[in-house]
Image 1 (cartoon, rainbow, N blue to C red):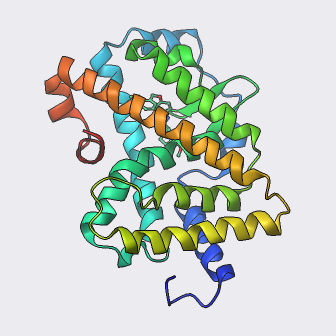
Image 2 (image 1 turned 135 degrees about the vertical axis):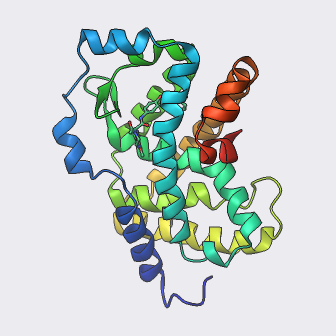
Length: 246
Ligand SMILES: COc1ccc2c(n1)CCN(C(C)=O)[C@H]2C(=O)Nc1ccc(OCc2ccccc2OC)cc1
C-alpha cells in the first residue's frame, strides 16, 4: 500500500485525475463527432489500401493511444516505485488492453462505429487489414464495455487494475506488483461500493477475461503480419508499437 497516500479516497482521486489528464480525447468532444462517418469514396480509399499499408496506418494511430496509456501508467500511485523492467513488463502486456478499454469510450453503439482518423468508422473500413475476426472481436468487446455504462471514474480504476497485474509473465518483484495491484483493487471496490454498484465487479472481471483473449488474438495477427511483411513490421511500424507488441 503506497505510504504516500493517506487514504483510499486519495488513491482513487489520483488515478481518476491521471486518467482524465491522459485521455487524448474528452468524451464530450467525441460525442459531437459520433455521427461524422466516412463517405463511400473514403471507405473505398481505405479498402483499396494494401494489407501492409493499412496495418501500418492502424499501427501508427494505435501507437498514439498507447503513448497516452504509458503516461497514465506513470501516474498510478506505486507504478513508478516498481523496477524499470517490471514497468516495461506490465506495459508490454497491458497497454493494448487499456487502449481497448478506453476505445469503448470512442465507440458509438447506435451505428457500430469506432473513432478512427478523425471520424467514426464501421468494420468495413478495416477490410484491407485481412483480420476480420480481430476487428469483429474489437467491436464486440467495445459493445460489451458500453453495455456496462461505466462512469469515467470507474473506467479510470478499471484501466489501472487491467494494467497492474501481478500475474503478468517475467516480473522481477511479483510481491511489490501485488501490493500495488491490491491497492488498486481496493480502490475499484471502494468506488463501486460508493456508486452502489458492487454487482459490476464480477462483470468487470468477465470483461478482463475477454480482453485477454482479444489481446492474444491481436498478438497472433501481428505475428502473422510480421512474418508476411517483415520489412513493414520491422522498419515502418512506430518503434513503440514494435517495442511493446512485436
Ligand atoms: C483510446 O482509445 C482510442 C481509440 C481509437 C483511437 C484512439 N484512441 C487514438 C488514435 N486514433 C486515431 C488517431 O484514429 C484512434 C484509433 O487508433 N482507432 C482505431 C485504430 C485501429 C482500429 O482497428 C484496427 C486494430 C484494432 C486493434 C488492434 C490492431 C488493429 O489494427 C492493426 C480501430 C480504431
